[in-house]
Picture 1 (tube, rainbow, N blue to C red):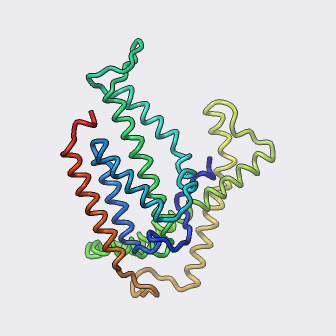
Picture 2: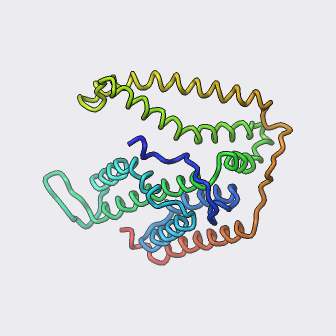
Picture 3: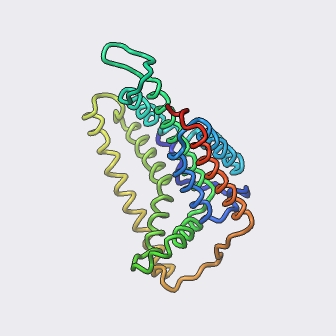
Length: 272
């Protein structure tokens, strides 16, 4: 299960999505996530699904990587959908047994929630798959630049966010190694009740925390050796610039957003 979590990994490539300005990728990702929640019927949701599928193809990332990243959230998706089916009320009864009643409106809403969660994970994973940590730091810093006027340490915040995202795969790999080592020593991590399983995690968490602090100390030492003093006065080798493909992607996203809004008003009854 741990090895199935792929968010935070960067896969170098030369696809259209790879070549987009990282600032534009963050803007597009945010817009997609917002409009995923604004879609209210099958037509608008289907349009967003088509756009996400097109982006997956343009990224040239193997589809198995996207589906591998989804394995870790299947339980959350089905659990959330099941809760909505049980608690959302409506007018048209589909199934009824004793105190359990499932309405047609609840099925629609549960399906929409499941699709929304899947699309959010895919779009977020695509950002990290196609953007290097260095570019991601520069993009976040440039997008948050107006907050410098309020005295916010924008560069430091962007650096911390990127480092945290970058070390997700590393810590997951370290966790899997520790678990395998404990299992080789006879540790039982899967049987028993919740309390017993929680206690079995202690031999994993302690070495994981020690390893995390060691990696953080090594990273801090490496940054000190390279005379890192924060964002003040720093320059960049590669300056971010918007290009024609970024304008094209923005126009496509603007058209998508307008289409979703139009389709929401065209057929609002489809989300009963």
